[in-house]
Structures are given as C-alpha cells and as structure tokens.
Length: 189
Ligand code: NI
Image (cartoon, rainbow, N blue to C red; front, side, top):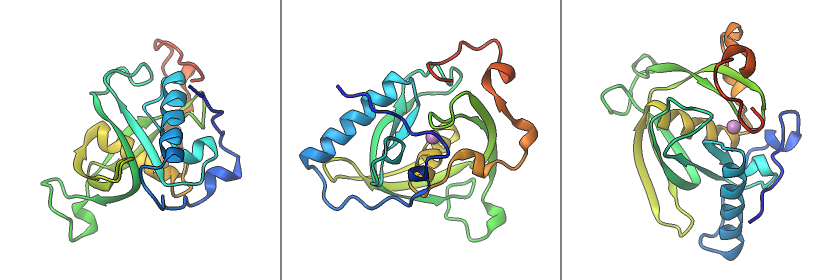
C-alpha cells in the first residue's frame, strides 16, 4: 500500500495535458492504479487522476458507495478509466446537434488538489463516456447527476484543468468550513 503525495494547485504538473496510456494490463499500470486507490481512500476522495500524484498518464479512478466529503451524493460505481473520451448529451440522451440542447447543471465541487475549498461549477448534466479499464476492456457508459459531474471533474485533470478554472460565479466559492460549518471536516478538506 502506497499513499502518494497529492499535488496542490500551483504545481505546474497539474497543468499538463496527460499522455495516453500506450499499453494496458502491465505491472506498472496495475501498480499505478493500486496507488491511486490507496491515495484516494486515505484522503476520502470521490475520485483521483494520475496527474494529481505527478504521473503524466491519462488514468482516472472514481467511485464510492458513501462518501464523507459528499454525504448527499448517490453511489457511483467504482471505476478505473484509461484514455477517456466524453460526449455531452442532450437531456433525452441524444447526441446534441446544437449547443443550447446541452443542459448545464450547477453543483458544489471540491478537489484534493485544492484542499479546504468548495465552489459551484457548471457541468454537462448528461454525458456518454468511453475509455478502457486496466485490462484494456472497453468502458462505454451514460451518466447523469453526480456521476456525470465526477467523471467530468476527473477527466478535466487530464486536460490540465482544475475546477476553479470552470467557476463562473465566484460568489459561490470559498472555504468549506465557512460555507458548510455543520459538515464534519474531511482529512484535508
Ligand atoms: Ni480534482
């Protein structure tokens, strides 16, 4: 078990566009995924991306049954997603043909690389996401709600984007302990 250091906003390694995983099911890849889960669980995160532990590869993990950092969030399937691709969908599940068909939803987010803060971020309400698992099997799912939000947040890390870069209304951005005083403080949140 290796809990790795999580890089914090300001570290230039969080701003890189991650390299695609060239080969699946290798010992190095399995070790990376194990470290990601150990690190995410130690921090009670809902997801984690390889760039957050300084690894320049398009690998994200996410999922939980219940999460202390997001106590009201419904369960999200535990997933390892490599080389992901996201397609935003219209509300009825079709591939949208016009921008105005793509509904955005506001929701609170935090990030283990931005400890102690929360902000409201607009995200696509419904998405299709595709990629591979660690063995190279195809993952092809549709998601909405918090599941869709987590996938978009984690995949943004592979594009060098942290959630504050997506905030439009900075009146809803601040310290968790001030915004949500009744919630128990997380490990570094
Ligand atoms: Ni994050």
